[in-house]
Image 1 (spheres, rainbow, N blue to C red):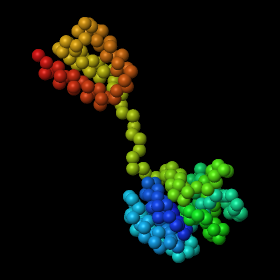
Image 2 (image 1 turned 120 degrees about the vertical axis):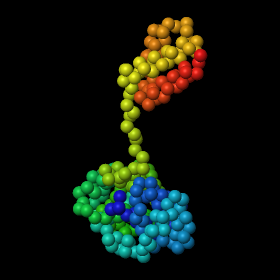
Image 3 (image 1 turned 180 degrees about the horizontal axis):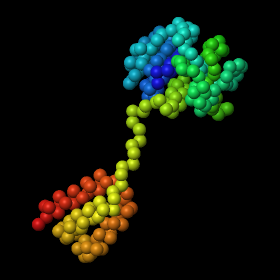
Image 4 (image 1 turned 180 degrees about the vertical axis):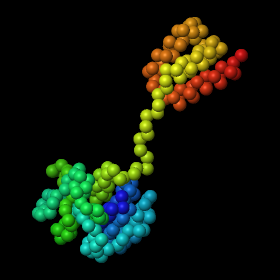
Length: 236
């Protein structure tokens, strides 16, 4: 998702900065911009586990204006309590729907520092406000948590390619394939002396009932058939 950048304004905690970078890496974002970072904290943050490349390539900016100079649409992430918001307010669950209305161009997700968040001037500099709905009792969210929630919401866009996706249900065996296995298993029962107190018809009926409950795939059933044949071949 190359049309997005994350902008951290005056961050103060290296752990939070690293966690933000990791959240970006998890959900396919790589353009990190940091406004006026505290130098010792920034040097420590660059060692973030798993995403040193994102931090090494991060753009250090003196001002928010500098960070947004190539951006077409910017979102100031903030809680609404005690804020006099004059811009459009976009709740996080509606983010992708709202972004779909914009013309092509880079979007910036702007987050403030851990202590005071974004200043009123920072918020007014952005195109709109992004709000993560929370309980009134606890309206603010940790910086890294806010970033990961926002990145996750973006990952629900159609152009997000996950590393792994749930696979398709494997094809079920046909009735004829089940019968081939049942014949092989019945021969094994006979040669091994197992369940010989049952007739062949009874054993096959038992196997059919077992297969109906297990929901085995064709591949699993083929494995069991080969196993039964190999064992039967070794018996006198």
